[in-house]
Length: 232
Ligand code: 13P
Image (cartoon, rainbow, N blue to C red; front, side):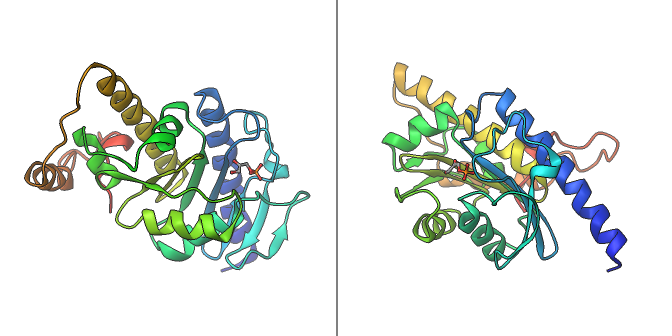
């Protein structure tokens, strides 16, 4: 691909990553420098630098790395969670963006439970019940491996004693997945406070998965809202 097109693609990713960082910080899904965001075009990944305040990070502060982790461009070191971001891209071809956050409700569930059960049908857009990956030190290959393992068939995972990771076809989808996960964890926490939440059984989940496959399809002028787009 000609260099000008590659640069244009990277510029678009930079803008998308910064917009997502502001949105996540504004929604209270990250605090200060907690969390990191990336998006990829081919073999290149645009990613937030380590220690970045996501509310104010600028496009020219982002790092560009190869899928092997080689720094290609950027004035600052990439996020300490680079192994995790790269492991997701290497493991899931459909992943075009990765969002790691410390959302309050999702992190609360990740500190207590082994999974977020499928208590609401919209969780099927993330693949169903969401696993909690075992705790491992931030930034390690061990954490990256356990996150990738817990992501099988899912676009979201909770991280024990830590937070959440989502991926999507693009940065908007990965961000919407984080928002949905946080909402569902909030519903779960509230439901647990007033009783025992009912879990959708296998048949109900299969029926929803089939219904989502055609959801919004007949009306190209008004596509399904991103949080209802089925997992591909
Ligand atoms: P970075 O500042 O290196 O991105 O790390 C923040 C974080 O959330 C680690 O899990």
